[in-house]
Amino acid sequence: MKDNILITGITGQDGLFITKKFLNDYKNYKIIGSSRAKVDSVLKKLNYLDLSINENLEIIELDLMDNNAVREAIQNFNPKIIINLSGPSSVYDSYKDPEQTIMSINKIYDNISQSILETNEDAHFFQALSSEMFSSESSEPLSEESKFEPRSPYAKAKYDTYIKTLENRKKYGMNISSGILFNHESEFRDDKYLIMKIINTAINLNDGLEDTLSIGSMDVVRDWSFAGDIADAIINITLDNKPEDYVIGSGIGHSINQMVSQVFSYFDLDYTKHTIVDGSLLREGDPEVIISNPIKVKTKFGWNNKVSFEELINRCIKFKLALRQ
Image 1 (spheres, rainbow, N blue to C red):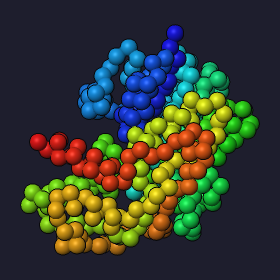
Image 2 (cartoon, rainbow, N blue to C red):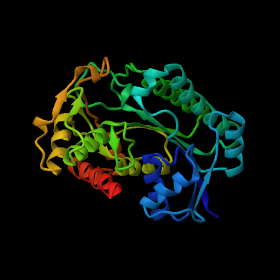
Image 3 (cartoon, one colour):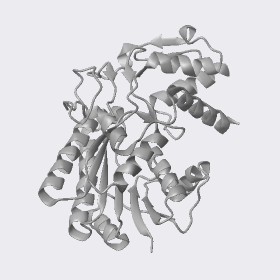
Image 4 (cartoon, rainbow, N blue to C red):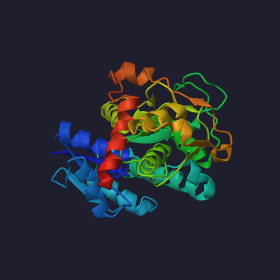
C-alpha cells in the first residue's frame, strides 16, 4: 500500500521538480497534485521532464479557497505528506491587488491546516515561505534567526502564515515544517520574471527584433538557485520526522550585472551596448543585497546546490531557444 502525497500548485517549477524526484526515487509514494491549470497544460510540462500520468501520479481539480473541498480531499486521500506551493507568487503583482494577495495566501493556508487538524492530524505539512519576509536593513547572510520585516503585500501574507505555522506547531503539536525559500529559477519560470525577461530580450537582440534591455538596477545582489535543488531540500524536510523551519538558498550572491553579462555572453553580445538602467523599474524599499545562510539545512541533511549559477542560466537559455525552433 503506497502512501499519498498531496502537492498543491504542482505545475509550478517547484512542484514539477518535487514530483519528478518522488516518482523517480521514492516508489512507495503516490503523488496527488492539484493545479489551477488545465490538464493539457499539466501534461505538457510533465512531458518536458519525461514524466507522464501513471499509477503513481494523479492530477485533481481542487479549489483551495473552498474549505469544504479541501477538507474532503484531505479526508479522502489521507495524505501522509502535504506540500503547499500554491497561491500568488509575484511580489510585483501583489502591489496591484494587495487585499486579494493577502487573503488568498492566508485562506489557502488556513483551509489546509484546519482540514489537517480535523481529518488527518498525522500528516506532515510543508509550507513554502519567502525570503521577502526578511528585513532590508542588513546585508549579512540571512538565517532562521534573522530579523523579519515584510514590506510588500506578498511578504506580509507569507509572514502571516509563518506566524501561524509556529502557533500551530506549539498549540496543537502539528507536524508542520516551513521552508524560507530564496530566489530560485528554472526553465519553467514565467516570462514576467527577471531571468526570463533578460533571456528573452537577449534572444530578440540576437535575432534583430529588439534594440535594448531596460533594467531597474545592475547592482542589486540576490541568492539565485536552481529550482530542482530547492526541491531536493524540500523533500528532505518533508521526509524528516521532526518539524522545523529552514532557510533554503545557495548562500552565494550574484548581481544582476553578472546575470545580464552571463546571458549576453552566451550570444556573444556586449551587454554594455544594449542595456539601459531605469530606476523607475525598481520596487520601493527593495534591499540591495539578499543572501541566505543555509547552514541549518546543509548540516541537518547534507544538502547542497548541485547546479551552479552559470549552469542555471545556460539551462534556461537552451530551453527558451528550443521552444523557438
